[in-house]
Length: 179
Length: 163
Image 1 (tube, each protein chain N blue to C red):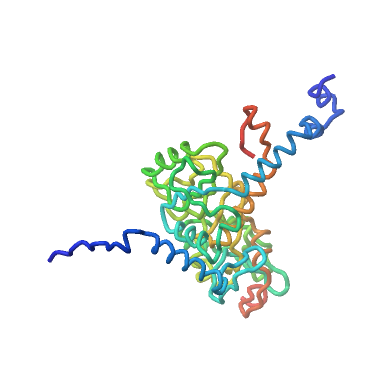
Image 2: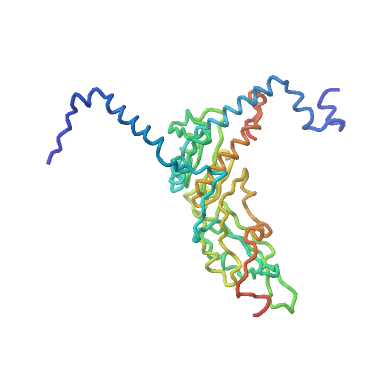
């Protein structure tokens, strides 16, 4: 009986045996890779509106995103891991945002910061994209108009927690990196 | 009027003194007062006027103060509030109550108009502002969650007692 048959026969939970299937070596490797990834998040600041000001404050000395290893804001998407969409995305900006996202190397994550980026906010109008998740997959939403730096730091910490339990080996085999 | 280009001197051209001066500034900052807030442990002390996200309140006897008058839904600039009213049985001072009261935090812009417009003082801007969620639906807060956020507020407007 293989694993699939065992699950069907109800003798094995679908989640059970997942740990055993990965060898000791790969699981330790995974922990190491994820540790490296989560502590060196390089954000891509897609700042299109006032949320970008709070983003700047977050990187500044008072709130200091460098404490989480995410201080290296790179304005080239090819060097970035996490895209922080800070601001209103208009229909005209949407293709650009999509292109910036596609230029980022995998694995990549997206934080929708603020009301406009996550849902369109108060701009319920034809030129505004009603949430950036209409054009790119979003991992975390941060409400607020704009969110305080604390809220963004909370998002960074939450993202780190999520990256820590992301399967690296399975992702390399070709399944999705999404959690 | 012409502005002449500054001719850099020999001292400026060798470039190293400027580097040394820059490093000296960096070095001096090590002994300055530290300004960084260690966020999850240390927190910002909120000023009295701070507006977080709105929450519904109960009166001291634990009854929901909202009468589902739809004023906050009407005034809300991003239309983040969704109310569906229900009817209370006759005999009460109160005729309506909110069956569904949802606030989409992702739409909310913390403007405080809902608090300002509310005739029953049933909705208040709470001081909570840190929320993160992996899906949009998790940030649409229902009535229970909003009441939990708002808590109890004793004040003279009591619809259940006097009409």
